[in-house]
Image 1 (cartoon, rainbow, N blue to C red):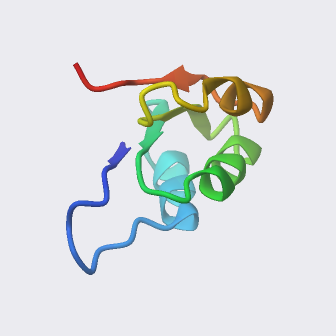
Image 2 (cartoon, one colour):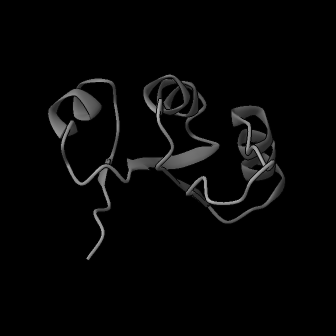
Length: 78
């Protein structure tokens, strides 16, 4: 699941993503790109193993901090 933040008026809440991950058998991988993303990333990480992996889309700018909080990496744009 990618949370790009482009759609106006649509907010994918952490609770919704976690519920979706629990309801659907395939593992859920989440990429969060909307600032401020750290509080959401921390909340998603706390919900492992329902959430399989949490990535950021901030081009690795804060990768060391993200890894410290338990992120699984970054998915920079190509």
